Image (cartoon, rainbow, N blue to C red):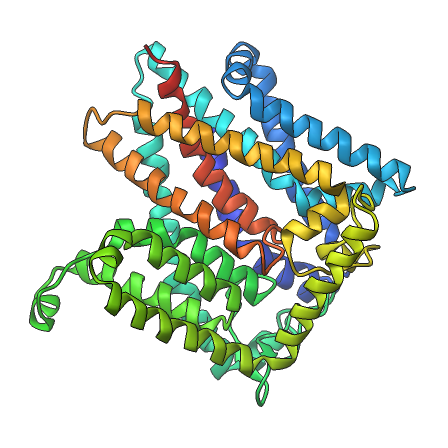
Length: 439
């Protein structure tokens, strides 16, 4: 199971590259929805197989995560019911679930995977071996990809002709369902934006902010001088370089939402320092906000469109608070959707109504409450447990960033992020949740 999970996550990292080279480049096919469906189908089949094979463990897991599970089922039933009332097709319902609710299913299934692993303790196998093995794999996967794809981004800029022969389109804007451009262009004099291996720079920025807490926790180093840096060992220099490259990559996305998430993240991890140095913190905030305003001016037309979309979509919610049905808004506009609110919360209210949005908010509170319960119960017993707990807590910082970023972006439109991050983070949640059931 661990081997399959590692292979699947490597596949997720390479997904857009493989689709571009094989789907567009070699075969010249269109309809990228088909490989996406295959990817989602593989994950669901994997979950169903391990659930059937370990039915007794599944029952115990369902008791632990009872409330989130029931609330999620309630959201699905309500959303599908509203959709049928609004004469939505099954296709529209599927699209709406994919872009608004699929990540919750990934969450619940990923927590079960670790819950299953944790039961190996009863067979004399230390479950911490699995989690540390998985975290080490994830660490090196992230480091290798950020370094490797940083080089690839420069190669795309220096030798774009190479990529034109393997399924990419020339420098251009994003167009759904066709070959991805080598670089995305935006704003003043068609400035190039980095998107790494994602389908869109905003998704790349969202991914970078999601894993930023973990990267900084694992790779952070302290140096008293420049001389000390150059005298450091290879591992220390590598860790520092990865942190620098990660932050530089966030800047190069030119994603305003990623910048906002980064500012929130900086504030959260430095809350004690901010309280002691309010004047300096205030000036730092001014500089960061000035940079954000500068990027917004650089992308002025996009900025205005985003503002208009948000306020215009609020009126749709007021006109029909019960909702328009799944697949109405957000990334669904690339299918049969009609409204692009540029806001995840408004997207939910348009698709499943204000009542469905309240249920989803209830689900988030239930997960947050469970997380707090975990923090109270979890006590470090050895270094491995302490590190697991620290990584889990630092990734929890991102939950607050997510709440803010959702106001400016459709945060769940890229399934790569849904799988790569949520599987990793919620496997940890599944592990630490077992602490609650231990006496």
